Image 1: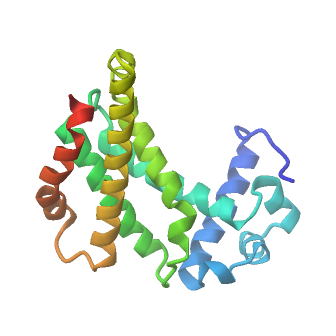
Image 2 (image 1 turned 30 degrees about the horizontal axis):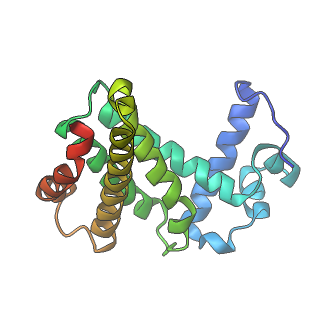
Amino acid sequence: MTIKKNEADPRVMRTRRLLQDAFASLIQEKDFESITVRDIAERATVNRATFYAHFVDKYEILEARLMESFMTIINRRISGHEVLNEETIQNIFLGLCEFHKGLSTMCKRRNTSLVPVFEIQIKEKIQTILLSFIDKDKMLSTPNAQFLIYTASIMLSWGMYGAAYVWNKEGRLISAESFVKQSLPLVMNGAKELLG
């Protein structure tokens, strides 16, 4: 069981950072499956009990690391955007490409097992971000409008995620900017309901 500590305490923050940095260095050396909590704790120079005081297991530290990385990229790209428009969607799409490229760099070994661990969380986060731009009055105007907006946000988030994933997996044959520019008309066609 994870002991909840004061996450604002500098010592707690420092220990969490030590553990995350240890994990990040290990993931470059070993497959995710072969990394143990013991490996992470030893690399961070803490004991396993300290690890468990901060994280439930290695999956939680992976999720924390990836979500932090993803949100840093997305927040940087959509900073200053107040409405959902083509530019906002383009920046989210570029952020997804950047995230996947960075994931390949972070996990130099073939960590294909990592994809299912975080894929759903990332897609749901994109959907939440898209919906955060939607006027609540528009969302609640009719049950049908709510359904269409919600469904469009799912399709858009999953579509952008999938396209960025495949772009990265197939070797990034063109730049992210070119890829997004070529793909954006398809994405925008799917986003019509959100932009309405």
